[in-house]
Length: 57
Ligand code: SF4
Image (cartoon, rainbow, N blue to C red; front, side):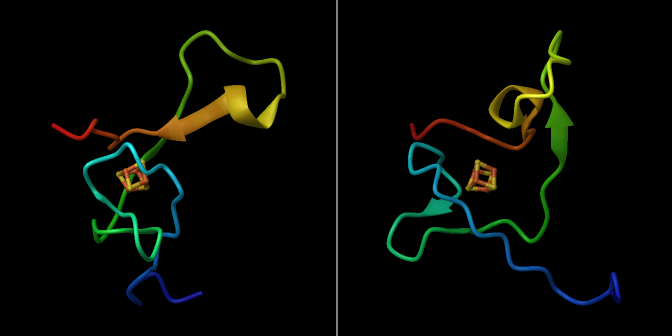
């Protein structure tokens, strides 16, 4: 994959200020996915998260 191509980030986290709740698409051009601190149990929802999440004001 050409990394210069613009990536579309689908996201259903509607409590995030960067989420377009109608289309469920992230409004940022890029995000960083981070490992959850202290988790290494292999469970998908506990292993990683979006490092750019910001709660709606
Ligand atoms: S910043 Fe992260 S959590 Fe927020 S809309 Fe984008 S991908 Fe989703």
